[in-house]
Image (cartoon, rainbow over all chains, first blue to last red; front, side, top):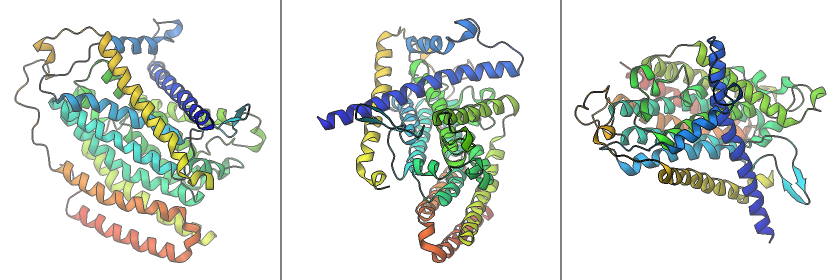
Length: 338
Length: 123
């Protein structure tokens, strides 16, 4: 009986997180279109619902009823499996993100503000997020289309190149907090915004943000799906629900890397000042994540796309050494301060 | 701390993976049964700027991608070694610090070699 209750609690947790994440994904597409249109002095979606608020729903329904085309000559099994291979890692990363501080109780059953707290939380997120690259590469290859193949290759090269500085940048916060658990990491940054690792690790934060944008294939690093050169990159041949899975995964990944950035550098659910502690922690967490997401969209409206050789050179010749130097300096300074 | 080290904390992750898989596959299956399907050879041909696709798309591709992938595997393993070191940094003291400086120096030798050999160039 006890076991059943525990499993039910876990499933409720997962259902809530999944529901919240998918709603955010849907409305992130809406927010992106609206913010972009505002920045470009247009109206954006206005037809479906007041101010186009039901647009994500309409888009979802449309894609759900659209025909899934498998192009002639495509490898059917890999072609069908690739979108799932991209979507699942993007979703399960949220299992270890601590969204708030306090558990809440119904009777004696505890509902924690995270699905689970494991002592390798950060490593888990990084490990699973790299699996998504396989889905992109396989999807591009299985389509039997030249654009898709080029997009898939570019994307895989880009994702693995920026994974190195990304991982190195996160070593900084791990060094300072002495833990990979995202809960412990958040707790270590309590007591005011000057304890956040963005203050002590500014270089790592900048490296992390740039690499995170490259990892999620967002502008200015969206070479894999560069519309003007590659039609739509690795998902050129995808349609209907499979197409929407690639989109879901991209936006879920955006939210996930923002959550990791908030936990590792911006103090997670911690309030910036002790005097502001009366505002619930979850509010602070969401506010920080929304700010980073806005920053993402803002960037898209502002900067042009890089060239592929520039992108690779930037990742390997600037970001990687810079991240290494940051790790070395952090460890030396930390040793002498102790 | 003890709580987060036990393997029982991994069960929710396992359940989450199963639920995500069911969500993904289930959505695709339901969608398969509600959509209109009209097959047409023109529709099934791959996109190539509107003209007939020329030759197979499984072409040879530049070996650059392969070199980048190999470099990634080597360097990523080295980065993975930094995580356990960072976690126990306070306990291993000066010995750990010097060890890691030597390790990163070796890393840099490989890095400089790859750079000089043109492994990081893209032309």
